[in-house]
Amino acid sequence: MIFREMKKNTGYVALILSLTAGSCLVKAENPFLRPGSQTAKPPSVVRPAPPPPPPRPLNTNLELRGFFKYDGEWYFSIFDKVKNKGTWLQRGERYDDGKVEVESFNEETEVVKMKGGQILSLKKADNKILPVPSGRPVIKPPSQKKPAVSNKTNPKTGTPQKLNIPPRNPSIPKKP
Image (cartoon, rainbow, N blue to C red):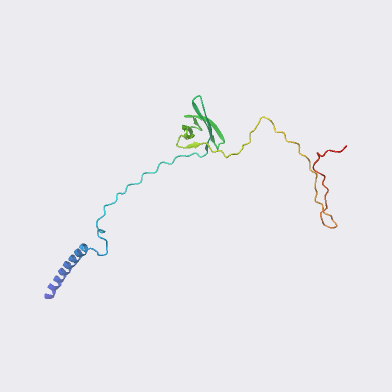
């Protein structure tokens, strides 16, 4: 009987010791940590990322080829490289079933803003001279026929034969 009571008391003692040891461990500070490192940190506020802007449908086949102002109105030459066609448009006019429309024009930067957000500007010159077609036909000088040169070899020796080529300058004046 004593043994049974001791067994019961041992269980209680073990329970009491484990509770006091656990509370001591929680309250006891680690000597190797910096002071204040175990204080509760405030929860970080995570803001959701803003949604990305909607993609702009870009027609990269369009080019601004030129513009001018006449009677207070701006005219723009818009060229479609895929269709190989261009047209002159004013602000607000539509082309290609309403897909191409000039929305605004900045005179200082010479930039045209199209409907849908596409921006067009003139290409910089490459300092190349482009051929310009003229109304006159170009007359080519008659070509001089060159004497035929053959690569004959001597059948006996197998060496190439020397050819006598006449002089090329026929403009030498003849002596009378």
